Image (cartoon, helix red, strand yellow):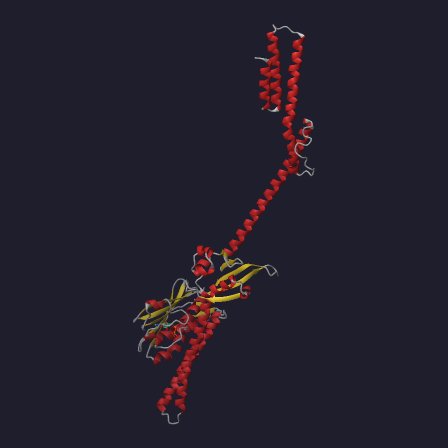
Length: 494
Ligand code: ADP
């Protein structure tokens, strides 16, 4: 191998190498060249060889130095941008400026500082990124929490953007309006809303009408859920005291109960007015009859009876109404005392006697030898028993019989009112204790009444933690039984 070939091979190789590899390779190539020459001369050391060695060592060293500078130049060029990246405040040197002149040590130090600054800056950025991520998670959590609150509200919530499109709808909207959620989000309100009043309101929001900027409320029965009654309140979403409108809030509230209560109250007034108007009319006619000087004794006596009956009927209605009102306002609080039942039951039978007599109905009282006292409100219990006895007489057939009985079990005391009258059809049995419920068939309806007696009796029994049960067969009679807990015997009581 010639020396020229060896050197050119090494040069070609070191161009592609890193500085340390270059230096090592160059030195090896030189030593190999010297050894080759030495070997070629029969291993005699002469001055020429010494010069060769010196040249062989110096040339690669110089070459290596130049290559090292060349390799370092791009690194030196990196220092400036790294410093700028690290933001260490020093003005960035243009790439390559002075890099060639800098010593490797200075370069290395600059590079190390720049890398350190860059690392610090990267750490800072990492911290800022983590803080940003934490903030984003917190905002997401707050948003989820807000949505959960809106979803859990008993009311349905719709939020519209300023253009009038739905951007939030709580799940309650679906059952309330009978619409599909996908349609609510995908279509404009005019396309999914089938309720004209609500649609008009949402259209006003969409058109930005001045009415829509005020809080307004409407009530309607949804077309797809006709058994509900809804109340929709539309409210512009504005910032505190600013004119900026972010959108519109629509709250849908289920107002079915209020509507039912309103309806019941209207029905009640109509019912009571009618119930008072008819006896008053009958009384008026009877009074006219009495005022007639030519009225005979018999019609006169009938007119007096009529007035008495109708007055009694009105008194019963008014008393029942007063009791219902006391009950429903919470004013009817049982004042319990130890009530000896036999005495109370005897009184009730005596009170019912005139009515029973008028219809040739026989009244029986069945009491056991010994009957415990009960802890009850005497007046309230009397109202309940009188209502049951009045009904038993009223719904008996003429000449029938009614039995008031008491029985004593281990834990409870049962008072029953049994008649052999018209009975109650199974479909009515479940409803006869509802307020104002009256059986419609001619046999029952023709006997007058207001549908309050059983309601009151049941409420009173329940105020005593008891229960009112019904056993009835149409055409064979009915038995209503009051179940009460037995009061503890007081010392000395038998
Ligand atoms: P009303 O004043 O109409 O009698 P109630 O509340 O006392 O009102 O009774 C409700 C309905 O229950 C009555 O209209 C009647 O149809 C039925 N009912 C109550 N008691 C009897 C009974 N002993 N026999 C048959 N039906 C009865």
